[in-house]
Length: 271
Length: 202
Image 1 (cartoon, chains in turn green, purple):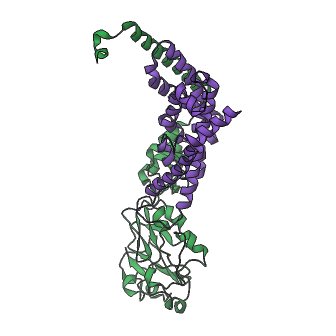
Image 2 (tube, each protein chain N blue to C red):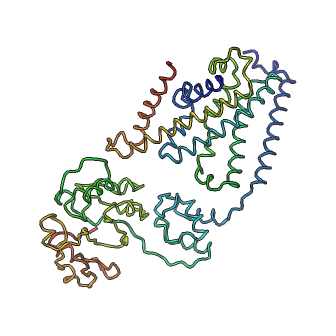
Image 3 (cartoon, each protein chain N blue to C red):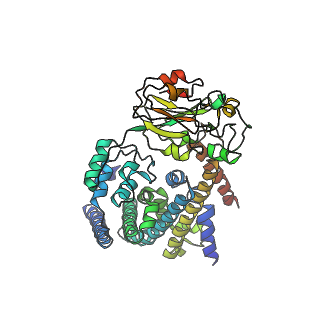
């Protein structure tokens, strides 16, 4: 341990050490600064300004590899501001100001799964194989007897970064509080059952079948039979029937829940 | 020629940096989720390893002349960090597509212990002589050091590419929730390591 004592330090060797490390440091510092001069790439300073204003969720819902990539795409004009579902409207307005683009505020939305079947919907066959709805769909459109039924294999739940989708009783449910409206699940669902609806919405149609009532009756306990009772009874005339399915106009809907009470199949659900 | 083959077999298989010597585990587990980024990471590491050996080997001779070999780790880290920094800037300028593909993984190589490991290994003449079958430690030279660095990097690439292929396949299987992701990756890494240990027994 003697060598650690201050008096035993050899001053000249210490100086050599300091000199060599200093020379190395200077050489590499010069090299790096030289290379950085030679390889200087002009970066748009708007990119960093825009990415600061973004939500930073890195959800990938916009289709780009994270928020930084999206910011770059925004500056280069390859994307539009409303491609991002996670950023708040005030922030989007600031981004629009930075880029000098016009901006129209969007309604804040969240995702809902338009199916309530699960175990209440019959199976065509029992599926054993690779996990995931995408794989299952390859085999005769999946195991559900309903062509537009949730397979409940959790592809959307895997896609959700916030853990906002749970599979309950064989059908996926979204969590309004956890949803950032990024749209990742919408892209993954092979049955295209997930849709964004306004956060202010009180009801949603939990069925996607386009079949007629008789065909639905034999397959699913909670499927919409297209009877149109909801449309007839809606005091605001906010519901129209399209392809045997009710479509709710959320601008007109007052949230009176009449349709929920009138639906004989309980296909319209309260949020 | 025989020496060359010996270096290849030793660096890539028998003393594979990742699965036999357990160096550079962080990128091995972190960047092995898909094949493309694993290959990019492997090639970047190979490049940095080769360059590092090229620079640190003569630099160590310089340190040894002044009897200050104890500075090796500081100096080597210094060299590695500087090389990675310069490569990053050069890539950004000359090959933006490759830069984008590697993105975050490139700066991560600075802290990859496999790179420091190979720099430390090639200066140890006695150890190297036994690893690549030289008759005496004096025969070790810079050419061998750089070759060893190159093939150690390729060994790293091989391991990470095998791992990414296995992980891509396992990701599609119906495995238990508790094993999914990282735990199953550890088990796979264990299998690869066992396979590589066979080379040491030959």
